[in-house]
Image (cartoon, rainbow over all chains, first blue to last red):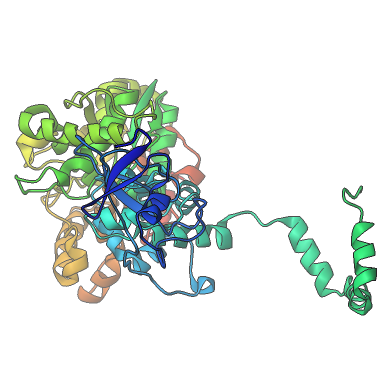
Length: 227
Length: 303
């Protein structure tokens, strides 16, 4: 085998691939075509959660296929989609406390604190800790700890209590931003000004302009406006 | 003096009054309760299956967190105390389970090789799990406590209710005699209370049965409450948020069941301690009590 190649096993079948490729590119090199399980290719969308195991290592490892570089002897499979329970709610009808969370996701009571979810997170989030925070109604902490979640679903795939951690986290972040986070005063002021019609004339004028006038206005804009 | 403190989920939200009053009292006694920087639910019920280690991991993890910052762990809720103490005993005495649990905790480190703070050494049951009452007796000392009492509670007839979780099973809890315990009475005597002995003080309040079989749970709690009333208690004191709920809130139903039922306030022992230590009423916080204790406390000139 050429020095710059590696053997990887995709769902058990061996492929020779250039060893500096990411898992996703290596699979495409091997002939796979992604219709699903692939999105932004930039570690933001969470579509390409992957479970793999290296040679001589009992441990299951996780990563995003678009980021993780292949290693010789790696066994892997992309998790295309993991079905997870999702509660439907109107955020306006909820109260930011543990009762709300337990009503919508009662299964979080089954958390054994085994920490398997945390070990399965490619984003290095303290998943168990935020579930435990949610359990005791510490919504601000759950929202904060889960901020980097991409909803890839690997935590839910591994949880022995069948909790869908990422949806609980989403609920906590929504409750946090709707009810707990301090309101941005400047935004409230601006919304009020818009409602009062302060910018109506300016908008009406803009609508009357042709493309050349708009371009000129844009080019001459004040890029760093003073007070 | 700093002592690691495990509040538990209930004290974090539903029993804030218990948590706040306990912290304020500790402060007044020169003890800072240092809440564990990370903690999980204790598991709420000690698992009786003998062939599963997964079920005790939550308790083990909390004890291991405590071992990083001290050699003791203080807790208040009777359920948390029961689970943590029994889990600790398993980790101390059952070498096979200890090894398995530690293998599991070590896997946390493996998954987070770059995180320094994760467990490096095995947990062997080295932390001493203390109930807050034990902390008052053994760390602060009842004699010291007596010196700090600003408002003696003389004239207040107090029924100390132990419930089950503090005392049983005896050989695992090693808290006090499960049939004739005295530590609660000793504490109340230190505060100057008139102690009401009543036969139901170690009987079950109904516990978690309130979820499955409300009828049964209310029957249990009614037996406890009526027994204290018959002995002319002014208040019942408890150490457990679930006992408090069953004994206090469920009087709503007892009124309908028993003709001429006289209501009796049920308060946490830390609220009573707060009164004795002269803590601001704001930190004792009686607003969450279903049966308001303020009238009887005012009548005894304690407010």
